[in-house]
Image: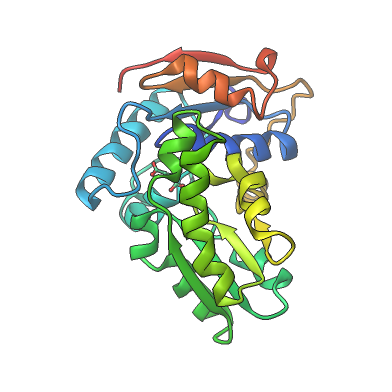
Length: 266
Ligand code: DGL
């Protein structure tokens, strides 16, 4: 097969990575994409490094079999915990989830940037470390949000359960005076309207999937891997469990006639 026509792989613990797929398809509509959501083992947000390493390697093995030309990791938790270990283990370029710091830095007037993310991502301080390298004057306010990715995964995109969790997590961030916040977990953009409802006009939200898609374009260009076909790329959504639920959530972002769905075993 012509390498340029091979698909891009994207993976996550579940439906969160679809927010990355959505942005990739907008920027690169001619690219074919294979998405793997590990819904059987979701959530990843409090998993050990050993588990995340094993899961990532299994998923990368599956994506290698699908003959991907590049993989974009649509998961902050995996990126924060094990990207440094797996980055050189594949024969194709492997892109870690973008931090969104570059974009947030341009938006924030006060240089006070909050990060909403999973326990593992926050414990690794990846946003704080990157910001310190870019500009020591940036203050990063870290807020772990256990439970939010689970709600999104189960399709609870509104209602008292997710609202009370979000109230609890946005309150300290509002009190900190941050004027910009990064979605440090790919599940969270599914409930951006709820975050906005609670934060009003005090905080601007940054979805790093935007930076991620630009970074993917750069690497495809650099490695001469851009697909030159001028047909809409196919999108295969593969889930390790709950494939129908995954498809229903995907429809919040992507029209149903633009993807196929499969349940797979790793
Ligand atoms: N969506 C993933 C992330 O960006 C993982 C969420 C989870 O499974 O806890 O971190």
